[in-house]
Amino acid sequence: MFNHGTISAMLFILVGVIYDRAHHRDIEGFGGLASQMPVYTAFVAIAFFAGLGLPGFSGFVSEAMIFIGAFPVFRTIVIISTLGILLNAAYFLWAFQRMFFGPANEKYNDLPEINSRELFTVIPLAVITLFLGVYPRPFLDLVSSTLNLLIESVVTIGGYAGNL
Image (cartoon, rainbow, N blue to C red):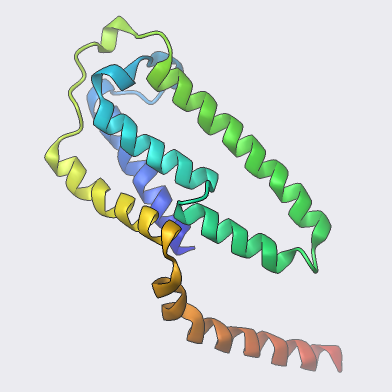
């Protein structure tokens, strides 16, 4: 949930950046933004790729742990869930291509690049997303004791429920 919150916060901030400049969020209304806003494009790419769960980003670690943990018990649900990941990938890549590499909309030729205030909010989220994607151990160590207690409680309650 931490990774999801970090990635979602980054996406919302980045949508706010473009909305602040264009005053709309219609993907079809943009195009060719990569040439005029390359830094913004890089951060959107990081957020999209993390949201897709690509290796090297925190979203991958989260999805991998969930699927590996759930697969032995809920095989069908895990397999169906992978279809959701594929649909998510198709949408993100479609949106990314339309906004950043599609034909440029002349109406938005003068959009300013992401500014220092906006970078101040996005950079920490991008660093967390990349760091936890490459080296998740510190965060996993931080939450492991709490998760172990939660697992023990669920097993205990489940054991009592089985005896009813």
